[in-house]
Length: 218
Ligand code: HEM
Image (cartoon, rainbow, N blue to C red; front, side, top):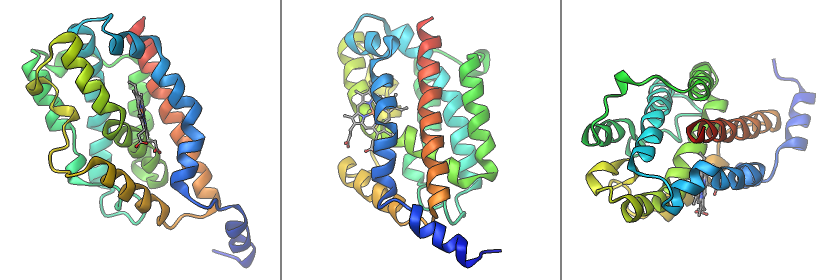
């Protein structure tokens, strides 16, 4: 039951914009992820194509969970507006892995990735937290992912047919899409408490990515 005092609390604690709140809340975590040894080495050309492949197969487990939950929540009032067929990555990742000669069925998720997958699975009944996971991966793919793609081609000679994961060819202008995505976030019907849950989960989602990079480096 909603009471008048709940409503008061809501208006007092709701930040101006969820998208700005997300960017601010995850800024430090983003910097850490970008500077992670594995990411830095991969992006600087100090590793090899096999290391990219080790990451890609782990991401397969992440996206399998993300898109399975996304399918379940596509009609949800809160999660539904961000779920978009044009973002779906799993078939592309599967095709890339096939080109690179790896069958994900023969690979075990790293412990941190298993925990990441479990965290995503737990959002099947928690659309607010799901949005945090959605934001963390897809807005990253639409941003830094584009840099990763060009570096993988440059340093390791990976070809376009092995990097389709980073290609959003059903989206015309990535920047415009990201701006519209942020507008969508900003119109989600969330109260202040819910916004804080979402922000906390986004920081957790970055943490899962950080742990994955640490395990890939180890
Ligand atoms: C190679 C490492 C990375 C590079 C070079 C990179 C680069 C960037 C850049 C340039 C932007 C700004 C794009 C814009 O303002 O439109 C961005 C945004 C973003 N990145 Fe990364 N990134 C990296 C790693 C990651 C990782 C590991 C994650 C999380 C899994 C991530 C998640 C995000 C998110 C969610 C945004 C959107 C921020 C916002 O506008 O709210 N990035 N990234």
